[in-house]
Amino acid sequence: MSSSLTQLIDDLATGRVRVVDLTQPLGPETPVIGLPEIFAPSPPMTIETISRYDERGPAWYWNTIHLGEHTGTHFDAPVHWVSGRDLPDNTTDTLPPHRFVGPACVIDVEAEVERDPDFLLRPEHIEAWEAEHGRIPAGAWVLLRTGWSRRTDPTAFINADDDGPHSPGFHADASRLLALERDVTGVGVETIGTDAGQAGGFDPPFPNHAIMHGAGKLGLASLCNLDQLPPTGAVVIAAPLKIVDGSGSPLRVLALVAG
Ligand code: 23J
Ligand code: MN
Image 1 (cartoon, rainbow, N blue to C red):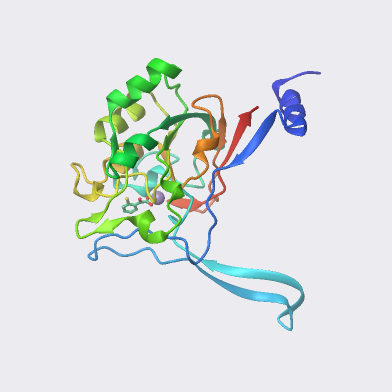
Image 2: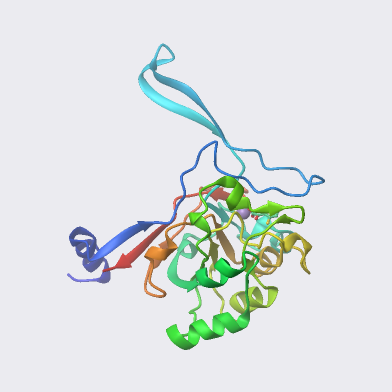
């Protein structure tokens, strides 16, 4: 008996395939997105001990967690945005699980973001990437490698001034190309959300959310270790918690990488 799975089991055991963790640590210090004050905020995570081998539970340790669905490394379901509200199977509990696993296409724009923290990926960048690495396949997770996860200080991660947050993202035309012409599974980013920091003032507001989720596509935010992935060839596994009617969830994002 031979199959790609028996090969994978062997490759994992021998280290020919590595598991790369694309997930940030999750705790009370995890930054949360700041929206204009007219909108309801997402609270910071809190964690409270139920018992820790003490009078409350002598042989067991466990905690209660309280957090927004969109905290830290997290998954965006299509129902998160009003554009995706009426699509079938648009919530964390109804999305078919095969959509959580797919090939990674990693677009490296670290140099551009170094020069301009408000950098937006445009169709020409995607086309240049494809000229080098091949066409982005349907079902791909397109991961935007910006280097932003190196900003471990929350103030630098949010990078706000009087005009609001400044962080990279997607031009609306790039989101349309990926969602409509390439039929990707979704996009993943190193920043706090899948839209640029300034995207609340774009047309439409938060265009990546509006376009991706309107097309039934998924999102991953606050990823790290994208610099450990090749441009193509890795497999991403990003399965959210099965929250009933959930709009997203914190999750562990893993990549399988050859060599
Ligand atoms: C709500 C409103 C705007 C944005 C977001 C959430 C996110 O980025 C998110 O976590 O989905 S931009
Ligand atoms: Mn989100």
